[in-house]
Length: 141
Image (tube, rainbow, N blue to C red; front, side, top):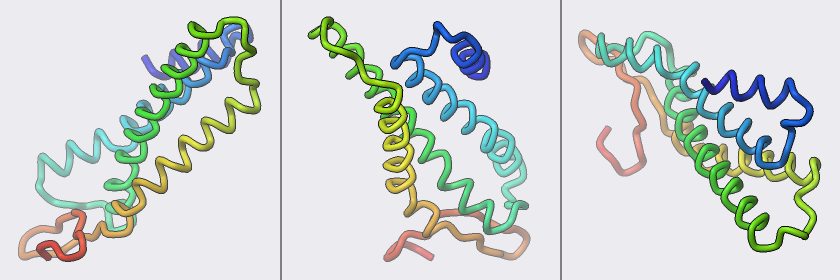
């Protein structure tokens, strides 16, 4: 569904509105989370063993948080855009450049807020299995 939304909006020029660009951003964040994490989560849950190395462990813990933040902030941007359209319908909408700046800001903020997940993610080799988890400072090791 998300890829269809992205394709329809980007393939048809008349669909390229401010709100729809925020919808593309929302669909992208949701689709990328599904693409990068669903299968890995299934395998990890099924086997209770981390097979994918420390680098992907960091990404695996970091990216879903990033995508959730990007989704939330995209929905917030849609709500603000709709609110402004209702409250002041004669006021000009965001330009394409301003919309891209907002979307870029959404992702920068999402990356910054999720970065601690990446920073503190580790793999730990234990007898019989390897784990991937976030080892917060001051928490259990």
